[in-house]
Amino acid sequence: MIGLLLVAVACSGPAPTPPAPTSTRPLPKELLVGTSGDSPPYSTRRAGTIAGLEPDLALEIGKVLDRPVRIVNVPWDGLFDALGDGKVDVVMAGVTVTPERERRFAFTEPYLQTGIVMLIRGADRKRFGSLRAICKRPHTVGVVAKSTGEAYVHDRCSKIDPVVYVTADDAVLAVASGRNDTVVHDAPVLAYLRAQQAVELDLVPLGINDEKLAWMVRQNDTALLQALNGALATLRQNGTLDRVLERWIPNLEQVRAH
Image 1: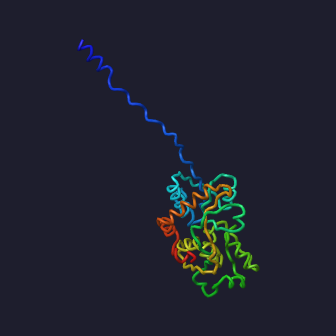
Image 2: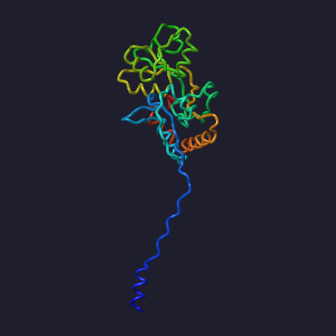
Image 3: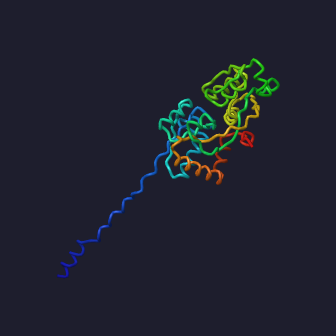
C-alpha cells in the first residue's frame, strides 16, 4: 500500500503553472514622419538611410510619446500633398510657418526661429553687401523651388529673374563653382552647406529674421498636435532640443534669431 501511494504521488507531479494573462493593451500606433532626404541639415541621405536634424528630433519625439517612428522620405515638392492625403502623420522637414501654409495645415510651436540669408563667394564681399545690392544689379541669384527664399526674392527684387534649383545643395554648388553669383535661402541650410565646401563662402544677413520652423499636421488632427507640442516642451526643458540643433547647425547662435 505504501509503495502504491508513493507511485501515485510521483506520477501526479507538481501542478502545472497557469499561463500568464495576455495583455489587452494595444501596441502604440506607428508615427509616420514625412521628411525630404535632399534638404540638409534637416534631412539628408547617409549610407542608404535618412539622417539629419529632423529624423533625430523625430526619434526623440517617439521616445517621449512612447510611439515607434517610421521616417518616410518624400521629395520636398510632394511633402504637403503626402500629408494632406494621409500618407504621413506629420511633416518634419525644416518647414517655415507662413500664412498660406497655415490656411491648409496646423503647426506646432516653433522649435527654431531663424532667418533668410544670402550666400556669396568670399571674393565677392564688396560686390554684395545686402539684398538691395543684388536687386539693383544684373547678377544671377539662385533660389530653391517653392521655398520662402524664392518668395522673398520675387517679392523684394521684382527686376531679378532668379535661377530656380530643385535642392539647396545644387544652388550652393553653383555659387561655389562660379556658375551663379549668390543664393538666397534659409540660414540653417546655408550654414550647413557652407561648412561642406572647400572654397571660401560668406553668409550675408538680410535682416529677415522672422522664419519660424515648426512641424506640420492636418488641421483636424488636434490630438497629435497637442502631443507633439507637449513632447517639444519636454525636449526643450531637458536640453535635448539644443543638443540636436547644435549637432547639425554650425554656429547655431549666429543662425538663431534673437
